[in-house]
Length: 158
Length: 195
Image 1 (spheres, rainbow over the protein chains, first blue to last red):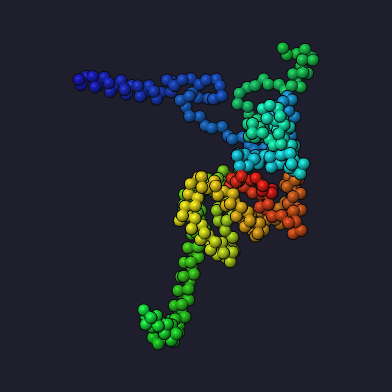
Image 2: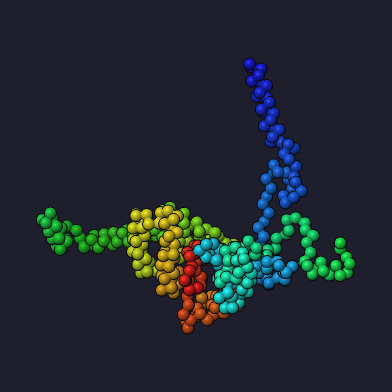
């Protein structure tokens, strides 16, 4: 009996030791998470700065949701109120000097244009985001549509 | 009972026999300092954030909403407390507001907003009361920090500069709260509110 307890104790101790050694943790996947293994606690990357003096940006392809060229800190968009529509709604856009939300946002699922922005398009930040100075998390070979066309004309690319 | 009242009345009316005028004056002066100081200290205690958020109604609704906003957390660390915006700073108006606040004590006693549902149901009413108050006093509490004379319009974006340099001046009929609603707490359902 004593022997059994001794074996069990050493076994559990060994397991604890093994679990804590980093060599036992799964290796870092080559994905979003850079540096260290899954067992390590990595420092959070710095929060990207707010855009201050950004201009409206050219869309990379026609149906790209335009990016937001201003800060949207504390903007309330919920059932009670939509701060974006405070300036971008049909009525307020001219006074505010803001672009009106596109007419597609007034269409319901049957493409019937309604008087107000439809619920399906109500939550602006589902598609529209402000731009920050953040580095891309992963490498990307994305090219804007103009570049694709130019390269296609010149016979480059694939 | 009547006799006793009469006795005290007589005591107050008659000049002092035992105490000197000096003692009474000095004693009155000291008592005045103590009472006045105590009163003001107590008043200031009711102006602290700990006091306001001591009730769960204030802690779990308005205070949580304030926390994310720029008036609570920002790069320079200057922040507004409850009383900075909701209580006038000068004495007369402060006392007026404190008397009004007895209604809030009533609300607390009878739990008028003690659940999220009740708070939500009253959100518009509560917000409107504050909008009216700030409209009536020309957004006094905003101006305690945001001084119109110190605004550099060239640093503001053109639309803000345009609005501030016209509507907000003495000739204009607007005040801060007309445009800047919901800056420190979430807005209620805004249907029908002129903005």
